[in-house]
Length: 237
Length: 349
Image 1 (cartoon, chains in turn orange, brown):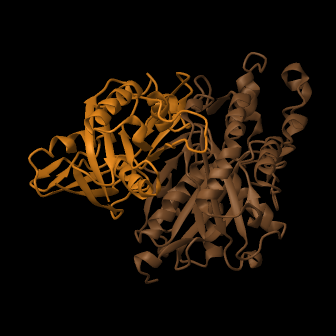
Image 2 (cartoon, each protein chain N blue to C red):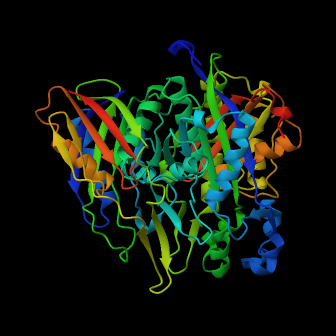
């Protein structure tokens, strides 16, 4: 499918996602030995945005912050396209698939994968560890190769949802999680890693990236969302 | 359907648009006396009315209506759909709560008994639908999916109520919120051996304009709000439209005068006319511009599907004719799709 040429990740505070993503993106691009102008696609994956923002896509803010082809269109100007995807904690794998889907048809053959969440408002209870992850993805080159992404809906529970709402008592926006899931602990063995189902997307990717050093064969990364659905990405080293 | 990778392509199998029954006249909430400087909103925008959900409807219920119609027209069993992408921006229920996780597509698939599909959401403002179509087309072409449902229900009229609560003299950026309507759309894509039945332009995001339209939860009331620098956003589109269209036509390898039906993103009917003039000046006459949003308003990601449905109801569409749709989304996304209408479209109920 695609190759992860470089990556950066860091733990962030409650609402540092934008600044952290920009900082990590610049480092990851430099590490991949490409220019910002080579980026043709930016895909962000996550669930929570500041003030429950719905538009524009968070990726467009990263795009603007990096100032990639932010000019009017001319007959020979280059293009970069940005959008968000989401599917609970499985968002990183969905974002990688979307990059693999679209990158081959674009002129600029590198993409930025951006993963992370912001605490939407200060009124939201936030017991998550927030991580920001940025990776440069290409169609080929030196890096870890994404072979496939599989999905499994067999344990999906449609009632286990997360919803943003306005709390009339305190006159502020919060979110609530419905459904109590059976805790799924992280599982790590030679060629397989699966995180905790209560982790956010960024933490899933951060923990996965901690395990790739020293790998020389394949590593399957499974993300189980709190709704029970899961995705498994198979990587080759 | 067994096809080699080289002979496998994607096509539009069906589409559907849905509007809730309740119709609201623009004069009931945006009369000159309601607006700063006695603005004649209807003259300015061309919007006469929009549709709104009933009490128990939200984005989900709208999406289900459109999806059911599209699946029925495709004559498919739900179980044969293996990819569901939700493109709704609002994801808002009737109590004005915003769905966050898991993907809305998962809930929609569950309701439709599509049990074995990969499901996720794409968010790219009003361009979410065409962005989703691009992903679905690629999945089908590469053999990773057979039939894809791309669906969106937009319950966005609460931003009208939010704007009406504001003093629009002090909050002029809320005025664009009065241009929206509720609606839904769905498309089914499937495999074909025939190349070129769906083509896409180069997709652009002109991110220098990414702060001109912001939608988010209202900070002190239930529901969403939108703030728009409407003129700047419109200029961002119009300044780039001519070259965008020329590049799109060239990249798609199509001839402008052979396009049977053209649809723009109808922010307002008046704005579409301005865009059409640029297109005509640049590329020549448009064979058939469908600018029928005067009574539907801007239904965000669902606009093209809603307009296609109106064209179908008016018996304008025939099998295999070609459609060119231009999509704009705050951010500022610009992307176009060209496709052949499904066989039998004129016989759909």
